[in-house]
Length: 88
Image 1 (cartoon, rainbow, N blue to C red):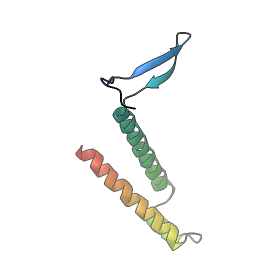
Image 2 (cartoon, rainbow, N blue to C red; image 1 turned 180 degrees about the vertical axis):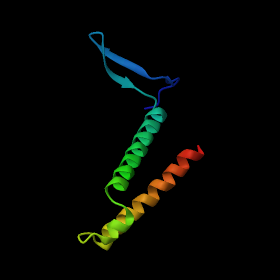
Image 3 (cartoon, one colour; image 1 turned 60 degrees about the vertical axis):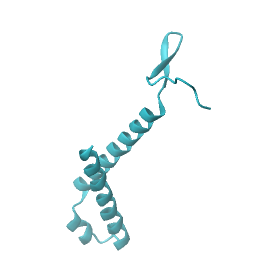
Image 4 (cartoon, rainbow, N blue to C red; image 1 turned 90 degrees about the vertical axis):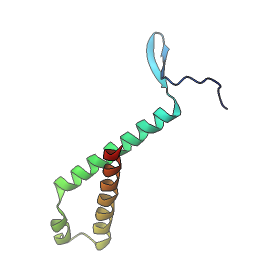
């Protein structure tokens, strides 16, 4: 359902005078979700870097080649996203 003249601002919904919900334009919502995902990715990368370095992952007895590949792929993906964020 399309709404003509839809509001481009956020709306706060209250119940008994207290805020309970927010209505957002879809574009603003999508931007917020993207930023949240980016922040989660950065946090994951920071935790991964603190826990192990690449040489120690390779040396770990319990690590498989597949796990190492996953870490490398995720790191590349995060690096690409960070570069995109910096360019915008």
